[in-house]
Each structure stands twice: as C-alpha cells, then as structure tokens.
Image (cartoon, helix red, strand yellow):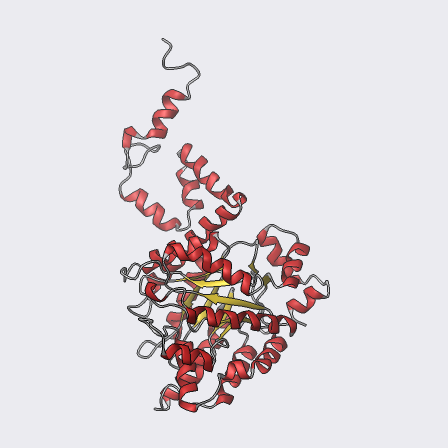
Length: 433
C-alpha cells in the first residue's frame, strides 16, 4: 500500500508520525491531509532515510535543490558533496538531474548517501543515453519512457517529474505562440521534439495508467511537470501555461484515484504582481494539490544573482499558498553550480520559505523572537547558534569586532540597544535628577 492508500484506510504509518512531529501537528491531522490529497509524503519503499518530510497545505514550506552532472563535469564525489551541503543548510530534498556519465550509478550513490527525499526526471536518462550513443537527443523509443520510470522507481527515487501535460494540442498552440522563450523545460523540450519527430502522442500522457501502476508499486510521488512553464517575464501567464495546467488538474484526479500521491509543478519566470493569481488558479484547478514552484524568478536581468530574484518570488508564492520551493543558485542560466553556489541557493530559499511560513502562521516566528532576545541581551553565542549560516555570522562579527563584548563594529558606542539598556531601562528615569 502507498501512504495515500494507508491514509484513505484510516491507518497512521510510522512515516506519518515522524513527519507530523516535525510539523508540530498530530499524526491524525497529517493523515487527513494526505487522504484528501492536500499533502504528500514522498517515501519510496526502497529508500530508507531519517529526515522524512510531508509537503502540502498547512505545513512548513519545503525546499528542494537541484544537483547533478553534465557533459564535461561528471564527478560523483562532487555531487555527493553538494548533497551534504544541501542537508547541512536545511534542504528538505534534492533532485538528481544528472545528464552525463553512468546515470544509474550516480543515482544509486546519491540515494544511498541521502538522508532527505530524492527526486529525478526519468526522461533525461533516455535522452542522455541517445546522445552518448551519438544519436540525436530525441532518438529513443516510446517504451524507453516507461522503462526509465520503472528504473528510477526501483532504485528508490521518492518523487519524479513526469511531463504528462504536454499533448498534440500543446504543439499546435506552441507553433502559433508569441513567446520569446518557447520552451525552457528540458524535459518538456525533449518530449515535444520526440512527438514532432515521431508524429505520436506524448507517451507519458498516452500511457499514464502504466506510469501510475509503477509509482503505486514503489510508492513514488508523481510531480506533474510544467513543460510549458514561462522562461521569461514576457511569457508568463499565457495560454500555453494554462492549457497544460488544465490537463494537469485532470491527471491529479487520475493519480489520486489510482492510490498514487501527486503534486504539481509551476512557474518559472513571472512578474511579482502575477504570482498570487497563479497560485490561486493552480490550487483551484488541481484541487489543492501541493504546489511546487521554481522561483518564481521575478526579473530577467540578474544573471549571477538569480538566487535573490527567485527568493523574492518564492517568498511571495509560498506566502500565498505554494508548498514547495525549488532553490535557484547564483549560477542559474550561466553554469553548472559549484559547492558554494549550492549553499547560496539553499540558504536564500530557506530564508524565503521561513519568511512565507511566518506570513501563514505566526507560530513560526518563535525562532525569530529568540534571535531578538539574544540581540537585546548581546548574547552573541546564541545569535550564532540560531543563525541559518552560523559560520558566516561568526566570521562577519569576528572580522570587525567592536571594542567591547556588547557591541559590534557597525554602531560601536552609538548602539541603539546599548543606549536603551543603559538609560531608558534604568529604575529611575533619566529625566529625574
């Protein structure tokens, strides 16, 4: 049975207990959310890990970071190091998007070393193998689509992106589209190219029932990919995006009916003022299925700083109801991320997620209140303990330390809290001689 089937049968699993404890809610409350499909608990039967997390409505906003090899940069050791950095700074999941090397071995090693959820995009395997065999990226058979899903599920992948919302109708709309960046989803472009070459329907859509059977067998959560997500502000909130979204809403129902957990992926690049409407529409069309967004990136002019542009959009999206943020690194659009890029991306997105959680429920502000008390009391050790990046906070403080222990080098003796402590909070008013 899957976590969804257990939930529908009224059974609370060990995984539900662990995830509920992290959320600070009862296991029954989480079971109810999973039963309705408003939350998912991605735990493949073949992947044993400790940091089990649920994703969905009324829960803490979760953070994913992508890693993986590419042509010319294929080091399993480096990808494992990225995984450990992601875990250290609080990522709830990673996605292995490797597109070069021995993909099965890389995936197995990442899953074996991961103490958090692991996601993948199976269609990358088929395309990569075609390229490695000196063929075109779309030169593979329809059966390869389904076989890759089975291979990933059997390996222990907890959730996988399935681009099942693209159909022949999508291609006709795409031909007449006024988009600047037609398709920026790698999975989406591979599928569209394959469909045009073979004059056939999208195998993920045509054989979706087979995909569901595999995912049910291993309890893999399906993440319905947004192959038509906007890749520039100009393309946001257009007919291509919503034509796919309507189809994803239908696929959500089919997955739930088959006992398979499902969430839905979203944009992309998007002006700030369109984010809330997109979240509301996704939740309505997809019956409140968990919403997994990439960014959204709120401006196209900041290469090298897209961890910031995406954190801005992610905070807004999550505050309005998105449940899962995919971190974007400073290297987005420029290069394969380094270890430092992974760290920067995770931290920026964790900040966005936490900021959004405070907007959703003030109970999440308790840790911020602890920081405020530590600052008021000049308790530097406590401040460093609470900080998301303890090492950076300590290094900044130590590099230009103030003359006394109860001040930093920013304000020195003009520290507002120090002045307040010395005068305003004295037993006798400073205005009484």
